[in-house]
Amino acid sequence: MKACGLNRLPDRRTFDRRFRIISFDMKHMIDAMAMLLVKEGLVDPFIVSIDSSLLKARGHVWHRSSMEKNEIPCSGIDTDGRWGFSRTKGWVFGYKLHITSSTGSLIVPLSADVTTANISDNNMYESITVSLPEGIRYIVGDNGYDDHELCDFSRYRGCLLVFPLQRYRYTTDPDRLALLQFYNSEYGKHVYSRRSVSVEPLIEHIKDVFSIDPLPVRGFDKVKSIVMLSVLLYQVMVYYNHLTGRPLRALKHMLGS
Image 1 (cartoon, helix red, strand yellow):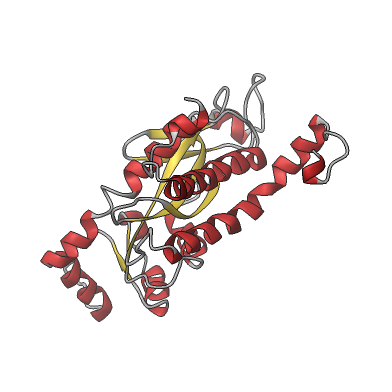
Image 2: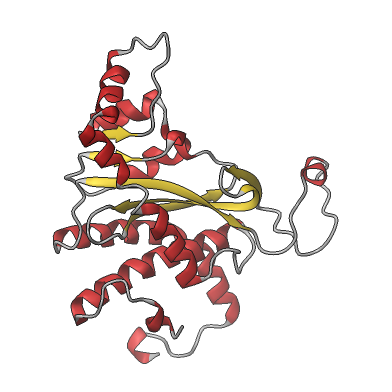
């Protein structure tokens, strides 16, 4: 404790109070770790992948009928949670992890944020890509990022947003036609294929290592803190393994699992 400048161990309420507000700091720490990983040559940010994943809230679900009436039918409901839908999980009551990752030989988080489950992916795109390291040429995502404004935002930053595209009968926008041509090219298909072998398995690995689905805490602030802390620790442990010569993604033994 003296090494940390403490004369006595803080009480539980102090830890709880601090835990609720550390997520903002951790967002910047995650960005800083990404910069370090790129600087050390562990990560090539040329192609970055983006995705989100629903996380089940702890306890009972809050059904829509009760939510609309602002009725809490039983104890143990996380009233900060919301309903969200995914093609793989269906409807889930809880929260959502938004994350970007590298796509090269080492797959690690580069940025992240947490929202309630009802927030769409395209609404979070700018906030989690604006802090990404320089050197990005492509950002690949699913069709949830099919948004003209996001494409313009990406081009302004000097990169291309790549997602599944369909050519409609009356598609005349030259930028969209150029993106469609790239997506259907052999190289475009190669770029997009990096998504399924990077960010998707990374999210599942983070969930497995830190046991955050279903979530172990209730309340938006606590949920955001523990999920963001999991992402940050993932980066730190990968970097520690690099420094000590261990397999980079051998993480479970470090947590005593």
